[in-house]
Image (cartoon, rainbow, N blue to C red; front, side, top):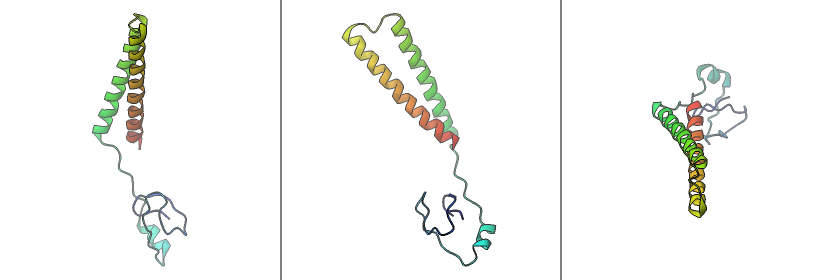
Length: 108
């Protein structure tokens, strides 16, 4: 048996969908329902999400290259440099997390 709202597979005795909370309506002939209805497909991410994921990945790579360059050429000296390095690493993690989120959204 599948949820008619989100398409999640459910047990035969389920009265609510565990995924979306939709209240299921019991019919006398469950065989007849399962023959007529197919599980609902989840909507895939659009082109905008794919472009955003690509842009975030490019930004992430550029930022990492910048950090490596600054480490090589000694731009992170002293207290001010240490704070800048910490800030740069922080933003790399933020951009990376957003990129991973967008990539997972595109895959679904």
